[in-house]
Image 1 (cartoon, rainbow, N blue to C red):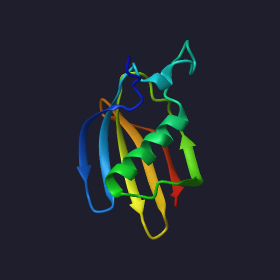
Image 2: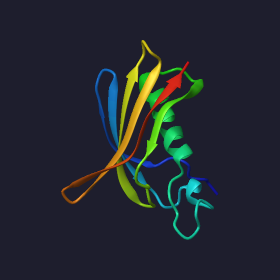
Image 3: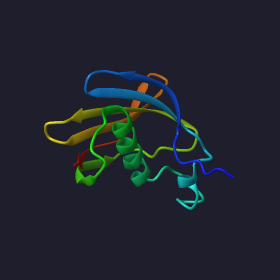
Image 4: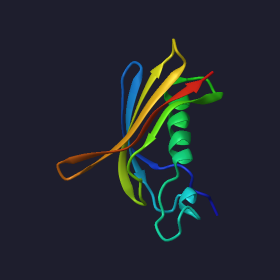
Length: 119
């Protein structure tokens, strides 16, 4: 049996040092298991892992995680959510900026954002 760890990539938009990914956060993702059984939500560490993973795939950023400068979790990401992950890579500073958002009707919701140091 295959363990599902990454979301389904629906769409991507790539620019010089930024990318926007539309991700389906499938309810079968392993990281939901045991993370609040009565109210499953996507762990913050998983959100950071995905940001680093996609940055390494799309920007050829360094592979070594050096730490976090800023991190803010505002609204949980629930099973089967459709989220937008915006990444910006600043190669000169070795910093990755990320932002998870979603749309519900006419409203935009920010789930999390931060800056990751890679080296």
